[in-house]
Image (spheres, rainbow, N blue to C red):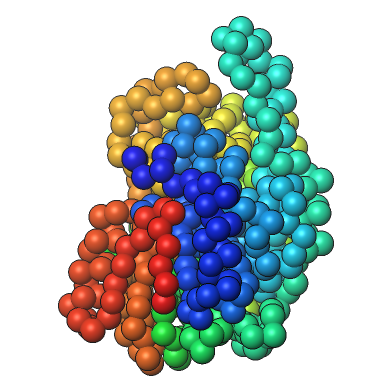
Length: 489
């Protein structure tokens, strides 16, 4: 995409604009640097009351040449940032925080307590991947012989650890000052454990930022809270043009796929986000086993990060919804643990799954198949027609997961092409993002709303969503910003 190559703004020009905004502007100013005109890499700069605030600091995920360019250098002057506000812990919203620290940021990072708990393993894992990729290049003779430039990690585990010392957890519903003239409130976004919508007030205006906005009646966590009042909203639009099927229907479809694959002795390989999606799968598998709707086959969680996040979920049961409480907790059952489940820890245990005969289920990260153990499972399973690759989450453009969803006949895994003979199934009902019904319902009840910025969506979804919003209320000023664009509100 052409806009990706044009999203960088020189630090000098930015500093001159910032000087003007701080000295002369009495309005809010927003500059969009990530998840604008696309989905990943959420980063929005807000200039208000003489301060510069970064909303999210996410890693771009997608085509590797673009990811390298967009992730390695910030399109703004890091030293100008006065505070960071984080909506939630997903890597496309938090993954560049250690790079921000590496480049000299010394301020505070505000988030919810659950997000702070999750960020520890999340960022340390991301740093480990950066270091492992660099080590792989160093040890790979073929890559060195191609005279390719060595891979330098974006940041190290030391930078990730330093990032955690900057976190300032704030409970949802608490109004707190980040500066004398700027207040912030986190309210539930219903997307993942700890996720929040941000309500920021300054210069006599109220700005709302949805972060990633969840669905109503989801599994495990409670529904999103309504935004009562705002002048401006920055809203995600991942499924701005689509409607999701009911959650119970999705569970039944999962059971059908498992029964079908098990009957032919195949493996069910599920690339899954370590945070939230994997826990939802365990939740549904537990119910399906309890109700004897699937055969008693082994389930392996082959992701140490998923195991860590699952333990964090278990410690935060006060955030669970009514169904989780009545179906599991009141019966003294752990929603995420059952007789057929095993968490693999070592690399040896993971490798053993590649030669183990089916049927069985593997849940492994990463969710978009771009890193982690899932690529090994795909490499060893994708050519066997008995197996099923089950996609349960959004797949960004130019990712291996997206190519599987597109039903490519051949895909590249670890620099080698493989024919896709396994069955590819997609369950969009597991999405953690609200569909257009959820998103519009969140917006249309906001008092005083005048301006809407649509971010975090593929271009087609953003256009459809914008059209639906125009039909709902023609008085709203609706903009789909592109990277590097600035607006005064």
